[in-house]
Amino acid sequence: MSAKPKAKLVVLCAGLMCCVSAAWADWQVGAGSQVQFISIKNNAIGEVSHFETLSGTVTDSGAVSVKVALASVETNIGIRNERMQKMLFEVGLYPEATITAQVDPEALGEAVSGASGVVPVSLQIALHGEVVNKDASFRVAPTAQGLSATTVQPILLSASEFALEEGVAALQQIAGLNTISRVIPVTVDLKLVPVEPESP
Image (cartoon, rainbow, N blue to C red; front, side, top):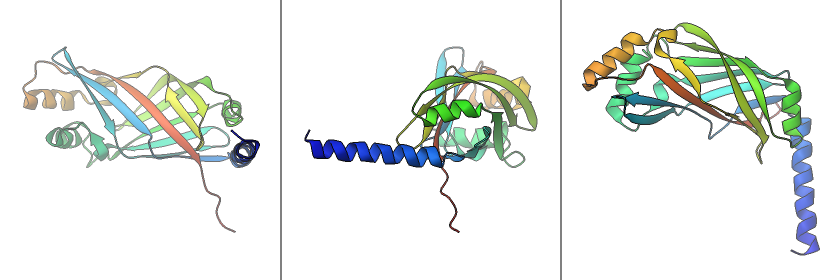
C-alpha cells in the first residue's frame, strides 16, 4: 500500500473516533439488533426464534431501555408466529416487552475509546404484565458504526416467572406435543449507533 492511501486511512479512522468520542452521550438500537430464544419440544428438538423489531436507547449515564415488539416474533413458520402472538404473548393486551438496566458509564467510555470488555448488568425484564430481575454479562466492543453489546451467556427465563404457563400449555396441546420446555434460553445482540444531533 502506498503512503497516500495509508495517510487517508489514518485520517478516516481518526475522524471516526473523534466523532464517536465527542457524541457518545446518546445511543440508539440500530439495524441488525436481535433478541433470540430457543424452545425445546419433546425433550429432543430445539428451535431458534427471534424478534424482528427492537428499539431503544442508552444514555451517557448508562441508562438502558430496550423495547421488543412481540408481534414481530419470527419462528419461520407463519401459523406458529400467529399462535405465539395470540396464545402465548397475548399481544392485544401486552404488545411489547421492555428491558431496562443501568450500565457502568466508564465501561461504555472505554468501549468508545476502542477497548472491548465484559460488563455485568442487572436487568429488569417486563413481559406479560410481570417484571423480573435477571443478572447478565454483556461483551461491549467498538464497531465501525458505534458499539455492540452481546450477552456472554444465555439468560434463562421461565414461563412461570411471566405468567406464561397457560400459554405454553395451550401451544403444546394445539401442536400435539408431549412437552415444551418451560425454561427458555435468551440471547441479546444489540448494535448501538450514535443518535444524530438535532439541528438547531
